[in-house]
Image (cartoon, rainbow, N blue to C red):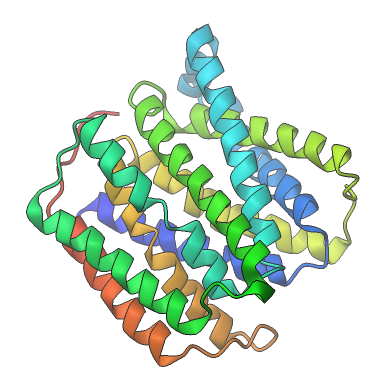
Length: 293
C-alpha cells in the first residue's frame, strides 16, 4: 500500500465517525454543520499563521482562484446542510450510503473531462462497489415513505460531495492543501452561519455538544476531509470518490457497536459491504500517481 492509498484509508475511517458524532449531539443539524466547519477552520489557522509558505500562497492567490474556492466552499456548505439534516430523517446506513453515491457522477466526469483514464479493472471495481451499495440500501431500507425525505436529502448531499471532489481535484493542482482547506472551510462556515440565521436555526449549543463537535472537527475534519484534499493532488478524482464507498460499511459497524446508537447490521449490510470493499480494492489497485507538491 503506497502512502496515498494509506492516507485515503485513514481519511475514510475518520469521516466514518462523523455520523456517530452528529447523532451524539442534541443541537440542530445546521448548528452542528456550522460549528463543525468553524472549528475545523480554527484548527487549521495556526498552520496558516506559522507556515511562511502558506501565508505566501494566500498572498499570491489570484482573483480567479479565490472565486473558485468561494464556489467550492458554498458547495461544501450545501453538502453538510443536506447530509447532516438527513441523519435525523433516515437511518445511518441509508444516509451514509446515499451521500457516498457520488462515484456515479465523478467517475465519468473524471474520465472524459479530466482525461483520467479508467482501465477495465477499475470500471469493474466501480460497478462492483455500486452494486454492493445498492444491495445494502435496498435490502435494508429501500426508499419507503417514512424515510423518503431523509434519503432525498442524503442524495442531494452526495451530489454536492461529487461536485466538491471534482472541483478540489482541479483546484488542488495549483494550490497547496493548507491554504486551500482553510479558505474552503472558512467560506463554508460563513455560508452555514447565514443559512442558519435565515432558517432561524439556533446558533448556540451546549458545552457537551461543543466538545463533541470539536472532536468531530479534529477527527472527521482534519484527518478526514483535509487528508483527502491532500491526496486529491496526486490521485484521480474517481479513486477518492470510490474510496468513500467504504464509509457506509465503517459507519454501519460503528452504529452497531456504539451502545446509544445500536443499529444492528443485517446480512444485506455484510454482503453488500464485502462487495463494496472488493470493488474499492480493484479500483485502487491500479492507479496513476501524480508527483509534485
